Image (cartoon, rainbow, N blue to C red; front, top):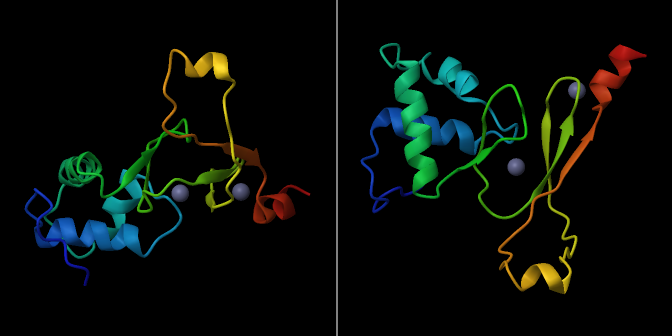
Length: 133
Ligand SMILES: [Zn+2]
Ligand SMILES: [Zn+2]
């Protein structure tokens, strides 16, 4: 297990379980999905605990939050800059690590220092395409 010490929050076994679930998962789960999984091992854990833990982990920069799924927040263990492919049908989210060298025109830079970017590609995943056709 990774060393989670010195993070500024106390990592209880429940919190570690949440982190470990996110770590072994690149499907950008929602709080509901994380709760469903983690509560199998921690039957007394409430949804609020899961949600609050996710918010705390986000605050210290250990995970990031995706707002690209309009129906619910999704969480990403990978906090390094990357883009996403989203299936409009099943809301599956896939990481895209291409470096697109995006720049805004000079006129925008005068008033605003750009620190990052994020591209959302929308489409239909292979599985959904097969079902639809
Ligand atoms: Zn799909
Ligand atoms: Zn991602």
